[in-house]
Image 1 (tube, helix red, strand yellow):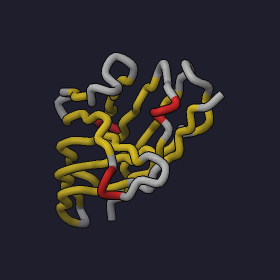
Image 2 (cartoon, rainbow, N blue to C red):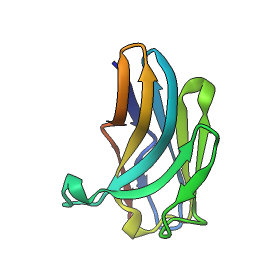
Image 3 (cartoon, one colour):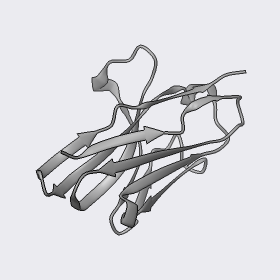
Length: 124
């Protein structure tokens, strides 16, 4: 089985910074793309907002709302991605979920895998 485990969330004041990590575990051969989505308080799963993603070739994409403030990076050797979040705003408050797409592993092929999420709260 392939699992994604997020860490690094917490409470931060507006203007502050946090760094999230997401590690994929299991006998993994390749992951085409990994990324971050967020789910605002009270919002249903179907309204998860895409934040950023990074391909195995390190091509990155960002939502307009976070571009210039967030940076996504990837360590392919560790099957881990990071999200450096700077100049955080109250509207960034959400549960941040890690996502992996087109995963090839010893246990099978997976089109999409989700992590359980980590809470980020931006408040004074």
